Amino acid sequence: MTQAETLRRYIGGRTTSTRDEHAQVTVVAAGKGGVGASTVAALLAAANAQAGRRTLLVDAEGGATGAGLVVGSDVAADTTDVVCVPLAHDLTLAVLPVGRAVPPSDIERRVLYRRGVALFDAYDAVVVDAGARMEMIAGALANAGLLLVVATPDRVALAASFAVLKVAATRAPALATAVLVNRADEHTGLAAYRAVRGGAERFLGRAPAWAGAVAEEEPLRAAIEEKRLLRTDTAALHSLARLVTQDPATARLRVT
Image 1 (tube, rainbow, N blue to C red):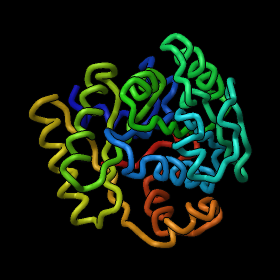
Image 2: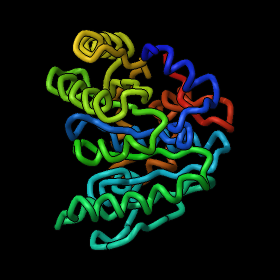
Image 3: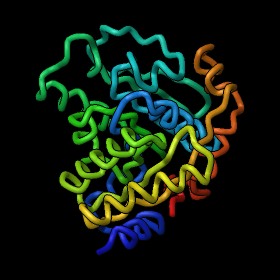
């Protein structure tokens, strides 16, 4: 089955695949830090909540650098268990303590993430901010319906995003994937996406879907700095809201 066929089945409805158990889960990841993946994850979760879905935003970075920081969460950095914090109507943040100063062992990391996964079935939509660490991304893919790779339109970020797609091709070959280009207009973003897609088609034999571009904007930066991201109406939020399907039973991204 081609990547396009897999994606169409993913968007079109539930199948008998074992991966469908977590079809409502979108893992947001990046090949390098600083491209805005945590912001994209937070806004995508907010868009799902605003569409009337009970949504869980999972910060797999432990709140220190990920979505928890972006939304202004004050979860203690030394927490040793999963912490759930209500953020808004239909939106809950779950912080996994895997990004603390003293990194947990691989076994401990898997146990902690499984505790987070145990929460997924209680929500209509789950958005996991997996960050840019390949070990965390690889672990999250086993419980995902879609991998959304975030990149900026520079060569380093685009090359790094290919590395994430390579991990997905190895660890979860049936998983639907898509690329979103951050801090770019539609024209620039589409050109960047095509570069990534070309490499994926040539070397991985699969083509990630196009999830669109999100333009850089001053109001968004100010909202993050002032810890009011979820209370600010930004163009970025509207861009991500357009990706969210209208069917609350699937809560999937509309990607092409």
